[in-house]
Length: 474
Image 1: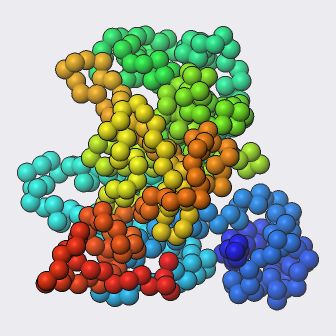
Image 2 (image 1 turned 60 degrees about the vertical axis):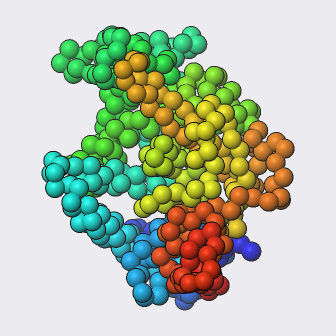
Image 3 (image 1 turned 180 degrees about the horizontal axis):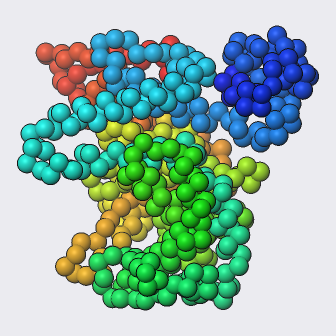
């Protein structure tokens, strides 16, 4: 059954931004004031006819009223409220949905407070370890990165101003089949930047604004060098656009703003190497075969995966993918999702997710049919990648990449060939700490919102028994 569309807070914000009274707005929409008032207070859902009237009256795309962003916020609230509930009963799914629909700003503020609580709690628990470290240790440095991750997360990992500008700039590059040479020429002609290559320099990219010399590590793969060239070109060409995005985001610290500036330049670099419409059409033509796409556009496997997760332009949407990068310790170092798939904000990811198996089979693409606790099914692609250091004396960087989409898009994926989409699926979750499955044998620890019992005379795979799932929740 389709989920009802409650648009109260969004509709009221649009109306007030234009200075329309309730009566004037109702007249424009062809509704009665009382009916419009009920929609704004979420007493009644919006019908398809009302949604069409809204897009026409306010001159906005229907995607503005998409529920995917609300679903992410609800999932994050669920994890946060479960985390701090203690012995108290966490809010029900209906209560969380109502909070997001009626007071989204308050919901986001609650999440911000919860994140602050978690950081302080972790710092107190790790006090013995941090006493011997510099006061600017790793636990403090995580704050800006988490804030920036949330910025991209709630933008669906799509930044329209940069994406369209990068696409326009890409159309002006010299098309001789050598993207690295074309980027060098663009830097020289547009910004007077000279590119130099130094074998084995410590930095992948080093730019001197005074001499306008960009130095790259010659030992890095061509895809890496091209990306660093595109990053520098984007940073110089789109500085005003990037600063405008940073001003609008209003980050809480200068450090977060600096992290976001790099992130936005990286985003623009990816959009420059993989222009939106050309890449979207190629992805559809190749049925999202990542190896074919990376060869076609002279980029890396990771760059293709990341770009596929950003194709959410209104009117030109691609398959909604999630994308994650995981290190060998299980830390999620990148996470983006245009789907309902949720990543753990705290703690480790589900051990049954095939991304963890990728390290055991280097360079092989693994495909998994996975089912989340809410019944949604995903095709999950996982592959390990290695980023060479360029020297025997330095360690290579190794990651596992995961890219996935819901099974309804299986027909658009080459990786769905041979899969029984209606057959048994791996039963994965977000993380043990909030997973409601009571029969999982891979649990690292009990979920926070379940009462457990430890039998004295019986031992199963785990040494405790959980209460059964509560049908009125989630």
